[in-house]
Every structure is written in structure tokens, then in C-alpha cells.
View 1 (cartoon, rainbow, N blue to C red):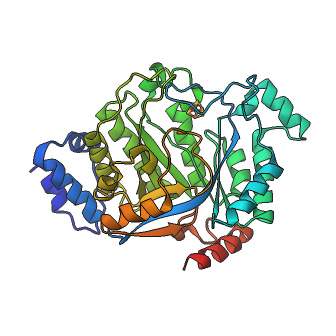
View 2: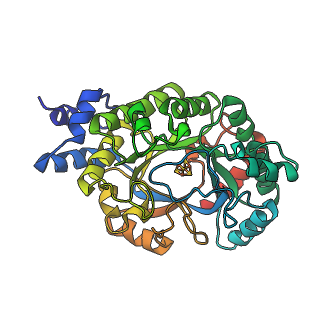
View 3: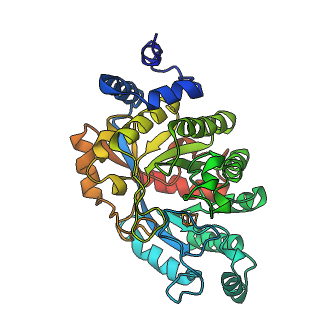
Length: 378
Ligand code: SF4
């Protein structure tokens, strides 16, 4: 019996348990079996809609302790054009303006442990803060008190204590694990990025689980990993989800070459690689949403809706994607068209998925604000 036939015999509402060899076999599916794989994944996506969150992208600082081989976000702190620390008042002004466009998520993204850098630390100290976590906490409090948006912070690797503090003012948080293979720490992708150590990243996702923080994570496909390493990465996330149940969304992101980066001439993953990975992710995670960034797959994104993807991620009517500035986000009207042509409705969601909007995951202040916004979407 092949692994596909085995899965075909499993009832749709039964979870599929697969080991590393079986997942690797599925990731190598060929010929007409690819269609069978896609159908199995599509059958597990039983919603009639594809979701998205209307957000504003806030690059809090462009300084980062890592230097990933594919990154164009990170800037040097001595470059006068670098955002060292975006001003809170300026952010609040932007967010208030975004309310006119119906934005409900403040997506705060920044380089990891920027306060290791002397210039950033000095800037923080001048503003009266000891580290970026304290600055972020203060910003999120302001966002909650002065705007109608919900903070979602992507901080990178953080220890338990800092996550615990930030949980008080964030409805959800996120960080890609990228890939859980330590081998990649020796390659062009991550050899200069201590924060991409998979042990640290998996520990951060686990700590978020211990703290009941609704969490978005994911993998980056095509950075030099092999299919076995993709299998292990998905299994590592599955293991954390089984243990804590806090993962709301998994992003399957394709590596894109960017001129001027060390990996500018590396191969990108093929469309087939992505179809196989998205399909397998859906089979393993029918309790979690699957997102494939639509800006990185402008002409091919509909195929992923047909093999299990059910979310477009955060889409901003206002700000550019600072992480992938060359890949423009489709307009919301385009996402509606892409969804409808594929047989789905387009539905707005919040930064926190509905099943986490309760006292187990949110304190009273966050809960009441979130519930007010959720009512607006009904
Ligand atoms: S990809 Fe992220 S972690 Fe890596 S260097 Fe860029 S900002 Fe830092």
C-alpha cells in the first residue's frame, strides 16, 4: 500500500499521523500522484472562504543581530537612512490614519535583538528605555489605548520572561522557524545568523505555547534545505502544536532571490516544490490555517488555494512590505477576485484567530477590545 492510498483510507475528520520517511515520500510525489496529493489536501480544507487581516506594517527598527543570506530588510546602524527606532508618536499617527481604511492589526516587525547594537541602545536610553522589549511594550500599550488596532509583534527569538511581558499587550505573536535543521547554520543562508539557530527558535515557539500566546510560525522553502529537513521542520512544529495547541497559522514561504544579497544567484524553489509542501502541510495541520504569501506568488497563488492554503495573511491598504519591498501585495479587490475564481469567498479576520478569542489566551483588556472588533466583522 502506498502512503497516498493509506491517507485516502483515513476519514476526513481523523487527524493524519505521518512519520519523517512518509512525509519525505509525499514531498517527492511525482506525475499523476501530485494531483492525488493535492486532492487529499484540498479535501481537508473544508472552509468556504479564504481569510486575510487588514494590517499596517510597522518596521520598528531595521537593525538586526543576524545577517541572513537572503535578507534585504536589515540595515547597518551607522547608515543615516536606517530606521534605528521608529518614533511612537509617528506610529500612532499612522495607525489613526489607517483606521479610515478599516485596518485592525498593527503588525510590528523588527530585526532581532537590535539592542545588542551600541547605537540602538544609546537611542533607546535617550528615550528612557533599557531595551527594545520595554520600548515595544510601551508602544503596544499606546496602540491599545489610543487606536482601534490590535498589536501583533514579530520579535524573533525571545526568552520566556520577555514573551510573558509582551503577551500582556499583544493579541498574538509570530516568528518563522525557517527550517529546523542545524546544518543550515553552516550554509550561506544562516552562517552569520546566531538567532537562526533552530534550537533557540523552537524554544521560543515552545515558550509561547507555555504562555498561551496565539502564535504564527512557518518555514522558508528553498534556502538550501533538502526534503528530509522540510519533513523534520514540519514535524517539529506539529510536535509543539500537539503539546500546546497555540499555533494559529503556518506560513509556507518560498525563498525569492534578491539582487545584492549573498544568495542572489541561488535557485528558487519550483512551483512543484511549493505545491508538494503546501499540500503536505495541510495534511499534517488540519487544525491550523495555512498561508502562502500572495505577494511572493502573484501569478501562481490560486493553485495553493486548491491544495489547502486558506489564508492570505496580513494585507495592508497603506504600507509597503518592508521585508519583500520588490514584491507588491495584491490589492484587497484582487484577493477577492483570486478567491472567488477559485471557488471561495474572501473574509476578513483579526490578528488573532477566532478560536483563541477567550480568557484562556487574552487578558480582560485585550479580550474586550478584540470582541468589539470581531463584532464589526460579523
Ligand atoms: S531575515 Fe530577519 S533575522 Fe535575518 S537578517 Fe534579515 S531581519 Fe535579521
